[in-house]
Image (tube, rainbow, N blue to C red; front, side, top):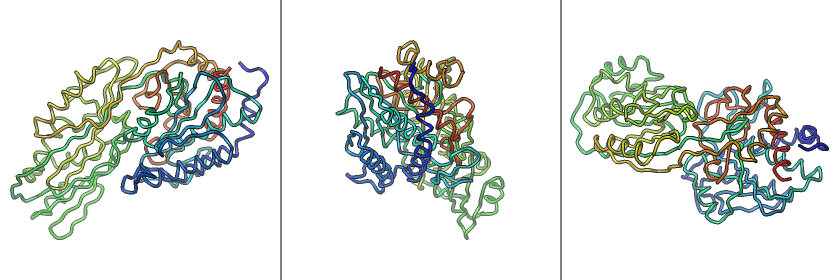
Length: 463
């Protein structure tokens, strides 16, 4: 460990800049929006604004950087043959509803900074950036190269990393500041699946389901479901929906909204899927032929089952935990049904043998097609790797806590590294920082402490 550098003092001197830049970064609503996408903004204008903001900052500070087709960028420091990668992302999930604070305000209250991206993952990007900046300003030189690699599409398809590594060097090892301290050295496999079904026949019914609109992202338990019906007996529907969040009646059209509890798809059982609530209300209501088929499909294979037991894909591992299935997005327009699923599984499971075929079989039994949108296998890095042991020592020094490896159900950019782990930014005492929920936050002191730990860790890794 370094004897002549006071890492805490180096970061404390940057406190105001760290907080101000985190707030400025969070203020950009960098939610992927393909309706505004073009060649110059492949993930939409707001994501591009965030990338442009980061590039402008790096230019002002005079560091070396590379923009890779507006999909990702890196900032490079130091010299040497080995390359250390620090990977974060600037895109965020949609803000949703129910915020006490402005979702893109970066407001500080009760020792916490609130806003979408404060914890996932803009705050950590700023923390790592200033960790390196503080070292450079103190005259430290690196005998290895360090790259902060920033992607623009982590919350959805990871096309940013696909494009980045088509031309850019794979780091020797690295970490992603996008989960928890001390070390996450194992991550579940993650797959995004789209299920589609086109309906043709529709019988006349007292209640006809016109549309379903559920959720905004596959990696969030859907908070809202909006169902629209055309009916000749509105009173029966209104009675059935007594537990709904909102019911609107307009002549022969009834629109009903169900409100669940959003949560990160890594732990869907901790949320409440709003479509599950809708199905409960519809259990004793007879609908048109198409809607009854949808009800049957969900009841048989998907509803109230965050662990994938109905579909036959459940598995459990002592270290990595169990399989989960989040049905995050559902859309129906009277003819076309689309279901978006986010499945996460432990390393003991063979995806090609034990998950994908079972999903296909189940969905095809209801005449639906399955499309694999994205799949990243489960990962594990031995915690005895020297760079991990260095991270352990730095963490223990600054927290006084024994560092032990852990596994998560979340998926981070550590997956794209040959040897990659998660390292912060959230400490055990931070509790639930409401990632992917309303009032996401990061404790101010945790952000500063994380930057301090990153500074010493980078210093030691580059000796």
